[in-house]
Amino acid sequence: MKKFIALLALGAAAAPSFANDSSAAIGLGGLELTHNDAISMDSEDLFLSRQLVTVKYRFTNTSAKDVETLVSFPLPPLPNGIEGYIDAPSFSDWREQLEFKTLVDGKPAELGYHEVLTLAGKPDAKGVEARLTTLGWPVKHWDDYEFSEKYVDKLTQAEKDSLVAEGLLRKEADSDYYSPNWQIQAHVTRKQAFPAGKTITVEHSYKPIAGGSVGGMLTPEYRKESEYFKEYQAAYCIDSAFLKGFDKRIYAERAKVKARGDEYGVAYVEHWLDYVLKSGANWKGPIKDFRLVVDKEKPGNLLSFCMDGVKKISPTRFEVRKSNFEPTRDIQILIAEFYDPNAQ
Image (cartoon, rainbow, N blue to C red; front, side, top):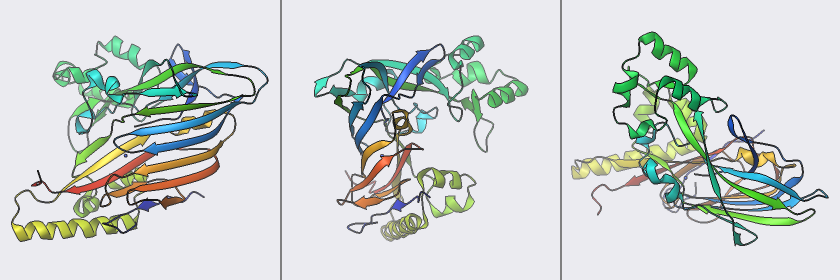
């Protein structure tokens, strides 16, 4: 049984985006990831941080025939609640800001991009773009600051309820506000040749889009009152040791603020970084040799994510190594960072 753990670091004490390559096909419903029975993933060396993501693979064509296939590197969907993601660039140029690069056997690969509309909570939903066209709604709702007034506010309550059930809208908790629930998921694609019986190396690097919130769900008061904290806790595998360390830190910071009469109060940020890992299960057999390194950037930051066998290898970096690994869930990383609002 997988054991979910969280890692905590305070000072020197021991105690994020973002996908795995997968074979793909472009059908009428958009890009679909497919299983490949000829190509094995011999190794994956993955490095995750808020500033940089790198991943290096070794693939082997185990068949007696050359194989050419469309390969996709799916990025996490651009969140429908992007306005809350303080690290996110504007949508108009986010793809360029990724600075995505791919090397195959050390040589730059020609890349393509394919975008798929998905619904938050319903990733397998089909025909989202066609449905929006029928409604007369813009796909890029974030470019229209009057989207709610133009489209949502004119709906009857019955129409709103129907669209919520369909997944196109979501009702915000504890309010009468309805917001769009569709997202854009980008796939970085390339045509890849796998020579019969040969091994090739593929390397990706890019600057991830990390989410963040000033303050957030971790405070003792919020945890006590909110019905949503358990869901948040499960997403990042936040355990009692993490919460104990967080509380110790926030109470100490509050004491400092009170002592100096600081008008700003305690300042901390919750950073979120996602990586699509499950697509690594689309190759022949498990990932034979898997290595993950997560960098939380500063020794005083708090880190939590769902993975077992985590080992601290530096003041800011944590390593996971696995053999014959078959990923069953994507990686969601939480970093809590305290900072001084008076610092220049």
